[in-house]
Length: 584
Image (tube, rainbow, N blue to C red):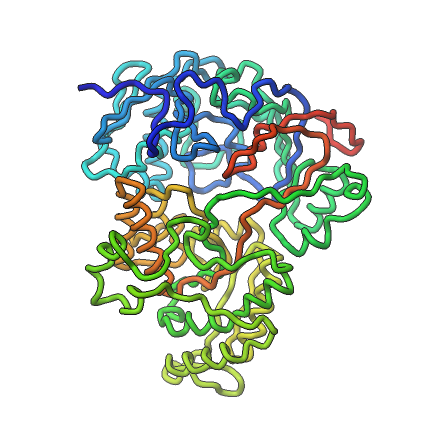
């Protein structure tokens, strides 16, 4: 029996929006179009080629191309057809078929067809295969059933998340990209199918997008009330302090602040006092994942868990949170912070069953309790933990010689590099470095710009790195990137730590292949428990709210989605008149 054609697919019981929906609840279908939105970024791009690992795409490039389906920001477990007018998926999820909307077309009016979908998939696998393999390894084949219908066939045992990953593939025009060298960066603005096209750009300074007047999906219910600005302009600022002053001077419109200290001390001045700039905390329920200092266990210096635990003990987060973060960041205590996938209490039920095969290699305490992150009084001295750290380092073979900690056998000093792109994190790291010096440990802090940081991550060129793992509400195939041994040596992979362990592989695969929410939660908690007991990350903290400031030129719907800011639903209420804005 053939699967029914539906407007949406869901991993929950039912989509929130039925087949006759007219718009998402968090969008205003009558929002006026026009005006300009100016944003800021610090990451300089050097390519428009989406199929090449070598380049960095510009901020805003997500506006250029549409996907087969989209997730509603108030219904994250469902995807609604966009380029795909209808979708077929059998109960066994052995395939997914997309029936392309006959109205869908690229910016040059060429229709979007099954050929474009197949070309896009094949070009992605060829150019980005080294990073996409964990996502698409369970795709058996892709076939065009006719000019407007494409089917992805899956291998047995394909993960539950795979159909949803396939639906988020951006569809690129075969007739344009076939004429392009896909193996190298390209700086020619491409043809797309999305709500915006590139109007102009000045490398290292700005990129300007203009709204496509004949955008094929402007009245589509998944797009109605969204993408309301005629112009979206990204200005580039290398220095974060300069970027903040530029915002206060009116050179761009909206700023999301990541620093608690800057939020508390620097968002002041006449524009704030007069109400021209609005400053607000907006709560969200997004999973926070984990942020912190990640050990690179590919480096021999961090093979010994006692060394990693000792450095964790030396870090006085409570003091950092009080002095530098104004107490605004509760510490991350899980790889799935702010999620029901965070481990808790003794392992039970399905979680325990997943862990049972590894009793001979996992610590027995793991089954009874979650590994605690070391805490301090926050007084700035941290004497008790430093004493414990010193004993652990001694048991790992380190001795003090002239104030420097060296290994008694190799004679090598305990010294390592911490790489970060953030001046704010550098301040935190300086506090950490001072504590490590009391133990005789030398940590060198390397502050790099965003492009260098991206290259170092791709090449795993660090001993420790300040980074973060965000998490989705329903984790899936992307977890293979982070924890599975197949990504440990992968260039461009997200396995920052270099984890390559059979039990972690098995638990990651269980999470990816989970067939229900209950199985997802059990596998996530088991994986979280094992990672926490491995002391791979010195956690920092996070907040379950956005710090947002904006010039009072905008309006937005009364209802904000639970998991996102949805800036694409904002619109201009007052025209831009600032005299220093560049005009094209």
